[in-house]
Length: 249
Ligand SMILES: C[S@@+](CC[C@H](N)C(=O)[O-])C[C@H]1O[C@@H](n2cnc3c(N)ncnc32)[C@H](O)[C@@H]1O
Image (cartoon, rainbow, N blue to C red; front, side, top):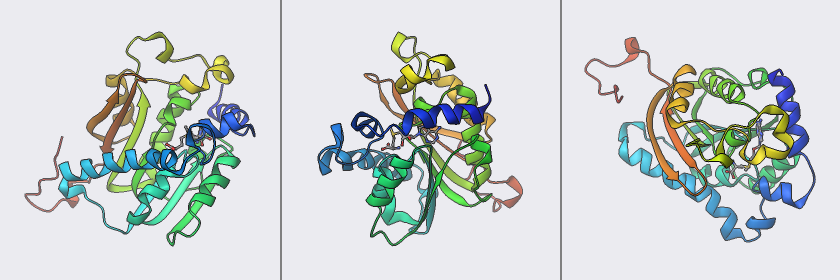
């Protein structure tokens, strides 16, 4: 099954105009996100990880001129939580209702923003090369139809990011627990919540294959098999200042 077809599968699921899909999509005001506080906590959690991360690797800290690419913005909680850092934000999602909700959430924010409704394979997305400083995708990779799909999304991220740019991706890890094993494609409609997972060490390979340097894995949540991976696009050695400390891994 082609990745273009897999996007179509995902679109069919995520565009269902039901309250439960709005809840799954992290749209403010629905289900678990009925209160402003609950919804805002979605973004705050990832901003906290980012702040800790920058504290640990101070030479990677970003300025308020950051350009962020987010894959799967849902209701926009992460975009809002990062907005004070951003000059520009681009969100790519398969769902029109998620994009509308994220646009609403970001109303009033001064940064340049754009949303892309994905209709084909991830590599067909219309994004500039070597442009973004930061790539984030949280609670999305688990909903990809296949591992090959995840690999292609990370390759797109690598193409579109500047050298030294930071990536952070939350996945569901596979440690043998039945509910968190990879599901076959034909089950997507029923199992999209826990469709795709990776063994931790295998996800590092996916990150490397996409051209990134792994930095660290953090925020492992055993109850739901979540782990957050941080990585960056390498800086070409020839461009590093003499004696620089850039080699972190
Ligand atoms: C659980 S929500 C996560 C939203 C947000 N990242 C957050 O943490 O609040 C999943 C989002 O991913 C989107 N999504 C699902 N499959 C996708 C795909 N193949 N490409 C882009 N977005 C996708 C859904 O439409 C939904 O908006």
